[in-house]
Image (cartoon, rainbow, N blue to C red):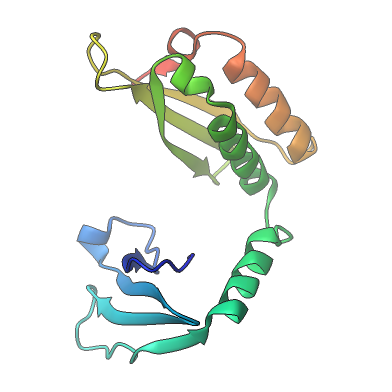
Length: 168
């Protein structure tokens, strides 16, 4: 997670459950001059487990390692790559904003059949009532992920998404 001068609490764990139910591990990340500090550790799952002391990193090395990790997509399965490319394109294109909508989340479906769900809603400041929509998009291992992402983006952006997506 990028380190800024303003401290931010970040959840490090992912329990495949809700944090309120199964807990999580949190840390506060802050840039302090030429150092990055991870502090104020919190384990909400099992308070008997000791949390680490503050961890300090050289800021330049931290930034370099973070950039390297972000650029490494070699671990991705096709569903991961499609989801990443969909997110990048939908955010950079401003497509949903054109229709007075906002993307709420992009969810991976790893069980067969694999897929990506794009959840979005109308902006709350519009006159129409808030509506939730979802595109449930299949992903296969037979077609290159980049081609699938492009095809799915074309499908989403072909028309008003409020008309082509499923209502929730």
